[in-house]
Length: 459
Image (cartoon, rainbow, N blue to C red; front, side):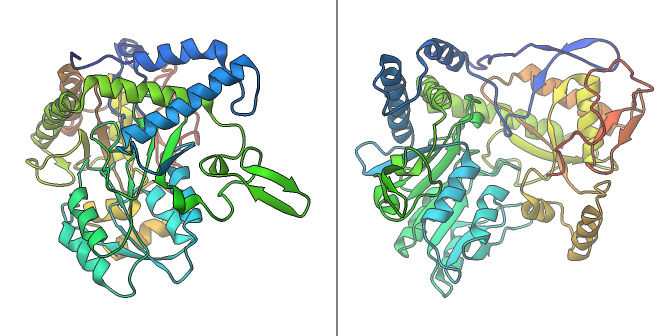
């Protein structure tokens, strides 16, 4: 029986802080990328001596690698509840690539309609803007919507070709009523794609969705493999998203005969090690069992939400605290930039969180209650290269390794900052990124201070 919290590779690593002391790192950025399961590391280390190119190689190592790669594909189908179906699993880089892949392969016309929601990550917004018209399910002020809201959008004409929706918000941890939504969509003859990137390490995937996509790097296998699953018939005709070696049966100078899916969809040398890591993570989650994972998530999630919400000056974004969510909490601190709060948590306390809009700008604008005029002003400033006032929040996100002590360290640190305790050193903001770092003149030896312009936080 698995005991939670379950340590991950690197837990307890000492990191430097600006007071000259080293502290055990608190990893509360799991929603971006998780740590590594010990099982995943072991499985990869065991596999690497036999690593080789897959499929057409006749050598023994190639055969071993091919077996490992195809076993990972079968494990992905099982993880998604597709055993015995005619669905295929396409192994790709990540969820973003998977959704772009699907958007291309569905052969949508420019006047076709895709229904999605304002809650989505950019990865489930931007690919569809290239290929079809979009209609959006709006959210309430708490960042939620009901299955009936989705149904109402599906009932509008013209009838949509697809509903594509998140299984869990990467900003608030909110869980849409996905089974009800799938029911409503299928009753209307509209297929459903679900972005499961945030859902996969926390809850079972929806088995009745027509398409699902997720990433290994968020489920304790950060070696760069994602999955797109859907009906074989959706990929049986036409050219693939990527063209190249491995996707063909015969190439002539003026003609090509594509091979069958899923090989047709995986041009080039695949990430075999990433597939092996993903398979190991799937095995690890299966061994833990969903009831134990969900119980730990709920316990840690309640500690995070309740603890942060109880701090004067801290506002937790999203649904009511009694709502069942993933252990993902976005919050603001009155009177302080989200970038400064995140920088202080890191530099002063060794706590890793994320800040900004979390690749979900439309959703964040609604959660923050910004007016159209305010968004216009921010857009103008960003286009001028100034992200000094870019709106956003701080996000703390937990996983199977998060302890009660981790949460306590965060709560104490946020309470200290929100309570007005002055920073022990000066912080400097880079207007190009919006990020803050300790002034090198005040903290010359702090290893965490980045060079100006080195951040990727604007999203």
